[in-house]
Length: 149
Image (cartoon, rainbow, N blue to C red; front, side):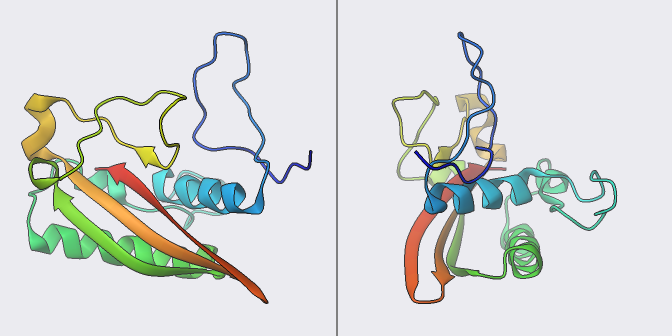
């Protein structure tokens, strides 16, 4: 089995498998995208511009202005650090208006869903769904991720 890189985000493991490797190029791109989005800008040595400022929007208002800033932050980071990834759409909604409510994360669920929202936090949480296409020359694949902010 070929390995491509480190799976992100790291997950808790009862048997010590904290560092998993990606097994397909699609999983590697997804891991790279999540790593980019969840890294605070300025936290990496020698790459201070790597990452996003999404953590700054955690306590901001759930309105179209904040949603516009979040989308712009995501598009700028992806354009600079993952140039072969084309974002098809970014959908940002309040967690109260989210049609599919995923409350827990387990290994049995879809690994593209990185959401956990308790009922009291729901009015203050934005759900971000990113549909993307990876272009590797002759082939392209489409996928999505969902995160909570």
